[in-house]
Structures are given as C-alpha cells and as structure tokens.
Amino acid sequence: MLKSRAIVLSRENFGEADRYIQLFSRDWGLISVLAKSARKSKRRYVGGMDLFCHNEIVLRGDPRGKPYLVELTVLNSFTGLREDLDRLVVAGKAAQWVRRLSNTAVAMPGVYSLLGQTLALIEKTETERLPLLQLIFQIKFLDQIGLKPRMDACAKCSEALDNAAGVFDIDAGGLLCRPCLGERTVAHSMRLGEAEQALLAQGERLKLTLWDQFQFPTDSTRNLLRLTTQFASFHTQTQLPH
Ligand SMILES: [Zn+2]
Image (cartoon, rainbow, N blue to C red; front, side, top):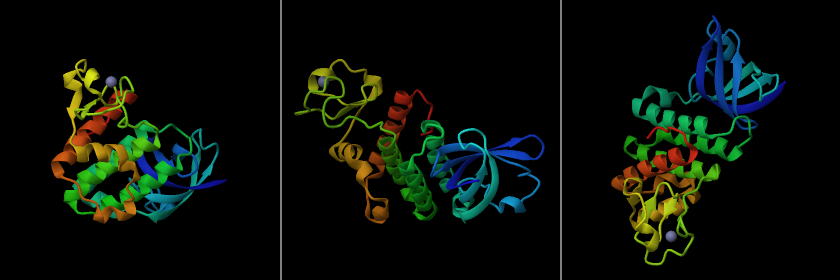
C-alpha cells in the first residue's frame, strides 16, 4: 500500500460504477487512479471525489500505472471553490494548466504546494482580485516547470537590453533589443510597462503568504494574463485557457 496527499483535478466515469480520478499528488505528481464503485457508494470515499478536494490517499499498484484507490481521507474539501462560479472558473483554469503542462507521474513538490496554496487563496480572496491571483499562479507555475520568459537580455540575440523599448515577443519568449525589434512579428508581440516587466521578471518570488498586501493595476493584470497564456501555449504547443 502506498500513501500520499493529493488534489483532485478531474474525474471520468468508467464502466457502470467506477471512476477514474486524476489527481496531483505530492509524491508522484500527476496520476490517474481507479476508484471502484465510486458512483454507487458515496460513503466509501466520503465526499473526497469532488473537484479540488485535498485528500490523503492510499493506493494499491504502481502509481505510474493505473493504481487502485483503496482509501481516502479528506483534508480540505474546498467547498467554497465549487459554490461560487467566479472561483470555480479560476480554480478550473489553474487545474487545466497543471493537467496539461505537468509531466505525468514525476514528483513536483513545488507545483503541489503552489496548487494547494493557490486553491486556498482562490477560496477566500475578494472576487475582484481573482484575475491577479490567477496571474501570479501562472508566473509561479511557469517558473516551476522551467519555462521562464527571458527578461534579463534580448530573447533573440542575448545582447544587453540597454534602452530597450519593452517589447515582449511571444515567439522569441521574452524582451527584444532594439536591433531585433525591427524583425519581430507584430501580431505576436506586446509592449510592456516597467511594472509589468518587473512582475514578469520576478513574480515567482512573491510569497503567497503575503498575498493580502500585494497590489497591481487591473489593466496590467489583464495584459499580462493574455501574455503568459499565449507564451505558455506557444512554447508548449498546448491550448491553454485564458
Ligand atoms: Zn536582440
């Protein structure tokens, strides 16, 4: 028997009574487990099958195969995430990013705790601040999977960015120096202000424990959300939700 902590990311009915549950686990990363009779017996899994539930799980079989879920204890059911549409949507997008961009069955403890912390904040933060939270999650997540926008030098030629115009090129994956600017594809680039550049460059260092004190303009938040989503989609060849 194997034990870990894990967050429910999706569910899929299987056969007449069973269900495959996709979870992000602390010890094996993204896994898919078979919950026998999950649709017949609610008692057996005590409400821990709902989306975003954080559970202690016990498995039988290889976690990297399709192990059986033997037992489950709910640590936090995150009820507030499913009762409010705005929160549900943002939590759903975070779950999609993790599902589509994490390698299967590789332990990523940083992603596991980022997801848990983010869901806890989505549940309790003010609704107006949800887009900003989503953005910080995306920046931190990209850093965790090693897909960081290049902000310290030209993303195309690696020259210094003295007097650069602050233009971010999605295809190149970062800011461009002046000489490279002329050759850019206009449709796939975005001009960024200083605060936007700073957040992209260092946003992964923000502590979520200090989330309440962090402020950022709404317009810039929307710009950067569009940018991080396009950037991540392009460089992973994955269609990601905005
Ligand atoms: Zn350049």
